[in-house]
Length: 175
Image (tube, rainbow, N blue to C red; front, side, top):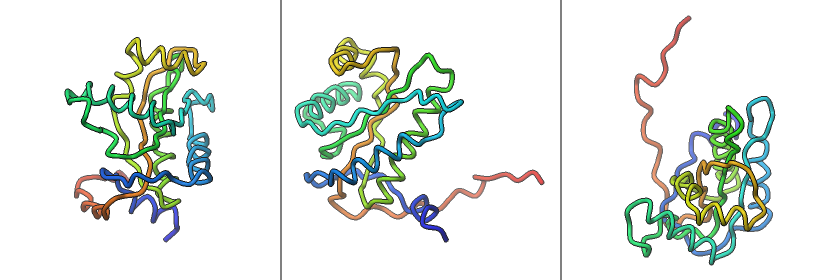
C-alpha cells in the first residue's frame, strides 16, 4: 500500500495536546501542502493564517468557546499551542469547497509528518464578528472572507484512537 493511503487510513483527530510547539520546518511543510489543495478553476480563493502567538491563540480560543456556549476558561483547542486558520473568499462560487480541501491537505500533511491535529469549527462565526473583522484588518487582510476552520497542531498527550470500522453502506456501485 502506498504511504499516502496509509496516512489517509490512519490519520485521527487529536483532542489532548502536549504544550510543546512543533518544529518550524514541519509547520512550513504543512502550510505549503495546504497551498497546493485543488481549488475551483485554480483560483486559490482560500488564505491560511498561521498563529503561533500565544496571546492571539488564547484570544481566539476564548472567542471560540463563547460560540460553543462555554465559559472562556474552556479551551476548544485542546491545549494545542499552534493553529492554522483557513478562510476563503466568498466572491468565488467554490470558496467553501476550496477551503475544505485546504483543510484536508493540511490535516493529511500534518499526519504524514508525525504532527497531530484537529479541525475546530466556528471560524465562520468568529470572523463574522466585529472583533474577527478587525483582526483580519489588523493583519492587512481585505475582502469578504468566511472562516472555514481552525486546524490545531501539536503532539498528542495520549495515544489516539483506532479508526472506527467503515459503515457497510458507505459506497454504492453502479457498473
